[in-house]
Length: 269
Image 1 (tube, rainbow, N blue to C red):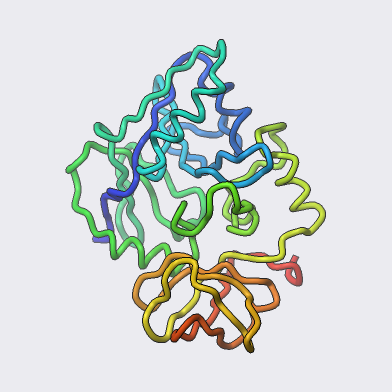
Image 2 (image 1 turned 90 degrees about the vertical axis):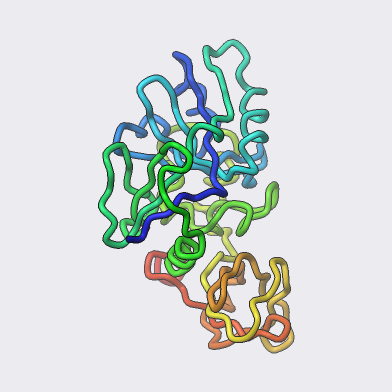
């Protein structure tokens, strides 16, 4: 059955009476939409609109629980704490007592889980006790690469990446009508002025998987760089003009872009 504990994920807990209002003004999506059985995918940005972290927001009875890259959990607690001021909130890295469980395919969704808000095909996610389920990291990685879903710092660069390059619009990671949040101005300008020039897309790999950051070329000209990879599948950040190329070069490997059906490119808008 396709389920796996995601040991590379952690959990940040935000409690207190002001928790929703506090987080609402800081992240890219509408925090108020998080409810039992409904998670929200959102990102924390720099004031200049560049990616710092992304996470799934779960609503518990007395807290918001953020399913985040485990290595980023301490940073996220520290960053968010700077904005606490007089808000009645408390922040805690709860990764030692809560683990992230993902299911996809024909795996039945357990009580307390929520559908992955990015795509129906992505499956579901739940917060469980550590060690309460098996881990199959390779199977989950193959699943998310096949769908073209970004995976935090494996596919994005802190203080450099722009949300719309990584599909946050199509994958329901941005609210366009909730009001201001940190980095909102640049994110809106990028969308409404059509400023996206590159996209993070899945690629088929022929040869050894290139290292993250390896330059990708087309007819000798640089058109992007490699991001995460496993076996014959990976993610690459490519210029729009390179997405229709039948083959790209990355060191000794050949890459073939495979634009997912969910992705909206300018000609398709």
